Length: 212
Image (cartoon, rainbow, N blue to C red; front, side):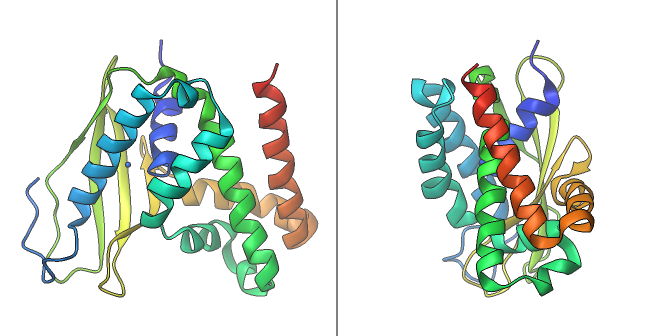
């Protein structure tokens, strides 16, 4: 039986790791719910049609994430929110390492769940937002085997150039807040460098597990 949280987490990391919209002020900017719908459909189709993805090929998964997902994610904001107040104390190089290690950890954490993708589809719920809103919640359900899975997205469009995802809600649990609690423990023990080391260790552990 498919684990609901694992599958939803996969879709989250990928989108991470993904109709009734108002008329937005700038017609050239894709509406946030339309963006989530398109990304979700494209990612699910890609996963279903590529054996390399379903087999957990990290290089190919990373390529898809970098080319398809990351342009639509404010990953700097996501990482800084997960790190919390100590983000302001990090050097530019430490911030780059945190973002890179966080992304690698997420990819490897959910890579195994790709094998479970079969006939799932994402249904977008009606968007409740005004035309001039710069921060919105897009609510979705993942339908497939078993009960529907709640998967919601927080998006921002502060510069007016396009919507970017910065947080995900899986079955009522916000991803950034969950990782902030976990990261706080590492930060308290070893500061920024300690957190970077811990994230790197999680990635290596996930890689070791995948080859067993």
